[in-house]
Length: 111
Length: 116
Image 1 (cartoon, helix red, strand yellow):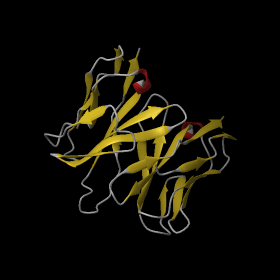
Image 2: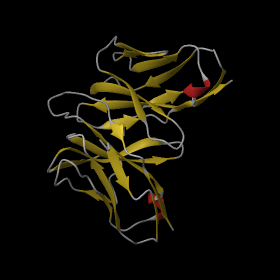
Image 3: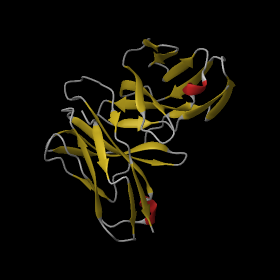
Image 4: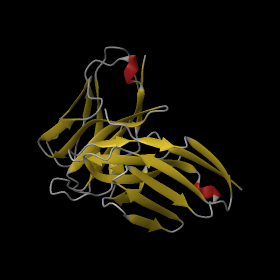
């Protein structure tokens, strides 16, 4: 069983704070790293797909980086807003078409 | 496009009963997958398919069967339900991965299953 770890498990920030989360994964058999945003009572929605070491992706105030050699990815949120409150999931895809999800970081942004 | 649809939304079974969770997508995606979501454990892959006629096991396949006779449908069968299968089940689909093309997964709304 492949281990994908996310930290922290939960995070409480004030509106306007910037924050970041970590996703750790094995560096062998790496194919891609996905980030998803999961709001309560909804389905996960894709944020980013990254495949190359050093990849950086950005969507509005959210960005992500990837280090495949050391096996980690960071997700950054600049100037958090209450609507950013959600669970953020990362998923490691191996060379055999299998996805392994972390257990997520639950973000709560207080107005 | 309806995207990824799942039925039913809720289901209660007794131990030993069998049932099929339905999943369909209208985006012509070749890759489809089933996950279960349990508290504190994230999403775990049950079975997946890279195209019609091809299925493979994920991380937690025991007690579940799948088939992929068409591109659109990927049903998940519980052969003899057990309380340990109480969970929320998500189906997902994405573009072809056979040629190495990687794309994001689109998730269905989920099925909440309780086994008594």
